Length: 443
Image (cartoon, rainbow, N blue to C red; front, side, top):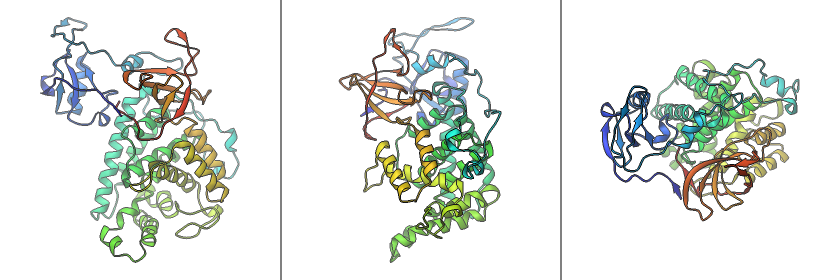
């Protein structure tokens, strides 16, 4: 089921011809590749027009949805048929939450951060670590998170295309700058970036898997309150951990007598490739590419490393890699839900394959109801989790998408931790998490 806006009457329009009062129903790109929060935009100011001109060459204007818009100097008159309502997320952006900043800083300044080695050497225990406070709600951060995620995904896709085409060296500076932008968004509001990650659904591709693992690993690092440079390193490690897969050609795979052994070689191929690259890529990132299939008991590959021979970056990326792989699935295997995936990770802990403390940290970071998961409410309505409540993890913020009989309804947020909803006692609760792929959401 797709919960998308249905276009009825629209005209392709150059951005140079846009005027206040027009309703933009489509862009010349996917909405998820833009900085706009929701599908559909009523142009209410010159700033809206300026933003559209920066991001698009042309758009589609719905002629049946025009509105009289008040400006500071005059009234712009347009024909009014079916007035377009302002999106609820746009309304939310105008409401400042207690303790929330008005302007987003390029990076969150934290008074004190931790180092991963101190945590791994038990100088600081995981149980005592407190994640930094969010300084922005998902509704305020969503536009930035979407655009940042989209630009970084495009960068990664282009980089991996170049690698497959035989490019010998990666542009480390471009990759690091993209990861700095992602880090800043994750620090402000990890929920927004996680939702952006899940917007298009999960697909089995090396570049998207790398992007997902990068965001998951960085979210874990944020949960551990790691320093900025370590968060960027974690993101890069996740982004390029599987780059060796691109160095195995389809022809070599078809000719291989032992296909499994050839696929296993992606760790060595990727590590060797990255070790020739400049900056961080030749150090920690290359080591993670080599080692992300190693197990703590020494049963992994390619080198059979064990215990302290496996560094902390690798341990985190290995957990994120496995989680994304088993929840995404493959053409021949259905992906697991969050609950089943966590059981799988805990079984790997019992086998002494994964770091116990970091798996528990991962579980705390993702939460009981991960951002982006679809849920059925006690009322029968379908919703998607968009933000967690750190103090009440079992009562997240849910965006309601359907009526109790599963028909599309205007999107509305319900904070399960609040005592009231729409002026009445809040009786909402989550009944169950739904299987992935049953619903899709466009923001």
